[in-house]
Image 1 (spheres, rainbow, N blue to C red):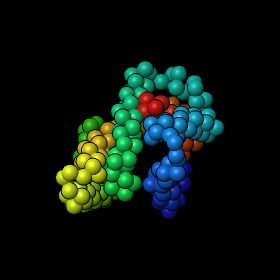
Image 2 (cartoon, rainbow, N blue to C red; image 1 turned 90 degrees about the vertical axis):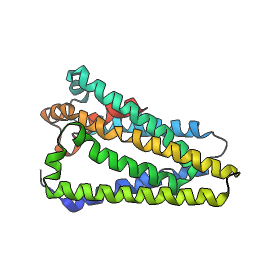
Image 3 (tube, one colour; image 1 turned 135 degrees about the vertical axis):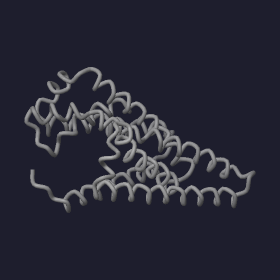
Length: 226
């Protein structure tokens, strides 16, 4: 498969754009509790779309999953379950803190733990740090962590400026706690993807293009999160 770094950067940019803006339409929903519109969006995002794309773009989807060992499916599902708690509390964090602060803290922590967590967990962090690309990735991760700290401090300053008796200040404090929890749990997604390596290998063996090998793994992980 021919590599195209610019195309990869474009897809990362596109994914980041969608990830950062998906909550905007929810602001226009009136009369629904956040739990209802969050679940409605989740059904399309985590159940319908992944299975639809995997069915269209991969070969022998159901055969691949049926021949995957139960332990692999279980690991992917359970990591997805942890990510689901992160996703659920992410909605609460945004509700209490707003889009800017909530997303910065949650996605920042998810990036840091999701990037460094899997190689630390499986003992390959040394190999990662031995390569220039790995060193740049770790550097970017720590810059992200610095951004999280700055946003958290700004949130604390805003909290103090509102006054200790303000209801908004209480919500900001509650939102910060929820955002930290959400960021940690949301990183479970990366662990689920890493645990799905045997599924990707079976998918490639079935004749699926290299670009789409991760779709069956997404189906299992996202099913756990739903």
